[in-house]
Length: 475
Image (cartoon, rainbow, N blue to C red; front, side, top):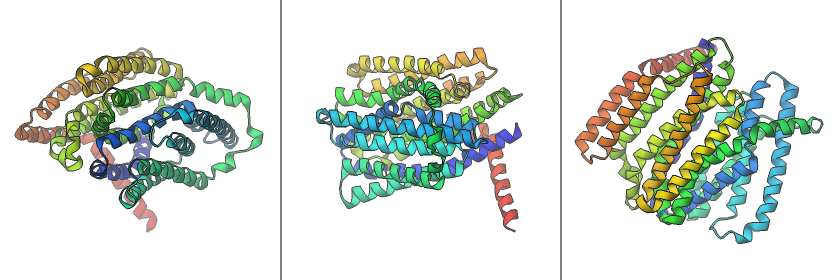
């Protein structure tokens, strides 16, 4: 189990260095975006991005999930790796061709600004994601992290060029994403020589059916996730207007950083669960790991909420001031999303994708219905509350299934800490009293350090050992 813990820390640190630094830089550009773009323009960009995300799910049929899951099992078998990659690439090619034909047939009926990016960014996203998941499935986390870094830094540089240099606004932001994704995909294609894995002799209808049999049940699951994340933007845009969607999008930006940090951990977590779920004492290791991550991300959520009154005005233009009231609620929804992620890797490891699909569909359906029912009554708060409810229902259903079938659990004291903590930090946040908010921030910093002391000590010890090894090798 010690090696499993070391592998988890190692993979996580590699991904963290490769992704989070650039994401933080991108986040720091928020003042630029909110000063150049109106709330309506910002809302339009975010709406197109939401459509692209949903279309990618429908076009790619979640094949990227099958790539990782099947390659992770075949890392030591060269021929089987060739078979998986060849058939995945063949299916993806057919899907892109089909989507292009459909888009060309219906594009005259689409009236949204920048509609060409519904085609271009779907293609770029499918290409990059496929290359990323092949690299990850092959176990090369360093190259995976470099690809992620390249994608993020390219978006940043092209955003600056197109916004400041050419004043392209909406088109500039969307074009930046397209170019960055293509650059990342090409880098991974050439770096890993993925084209060498593709061989005509390995085309196999049976394998294609097997891959699709794994991935297609995940489509409702991912669509439900997107229903929870993106339906808010779509419903708000049409019920209240694109300007309100701009405010909503800025509200989500802070929790998006939080989500990005967790996605790094989740990438390593799923790998760790797959590797340990059937080992002796494996479930004990997984339980210990998810409880540590639970406390860590609960602490990060509280830190983000309590520091927000002191940094909001720095990052956000005053025309987006209303976003302040929704930010802590979205951070809480993101923490519940983390709770879902902590246990969902177990279903992935056991290939129980149909169960994932059913639970996600239920949560997504409830999210949309609640959003539609409340949007006229409480405005943007309907989007926030429906998101929290959707994630919470998904967690409750999946957690009880986990308790019934596995010896894996989240400790009761951690749940109690989360509930009490959420009540306290929300009270201080909405108090509008700077002294109370400052005391809350100091208290959260101290308690977070105490709760995560052992985790921090382990990580620092690992980093020190890593650098000591590098120094010894260089000598």
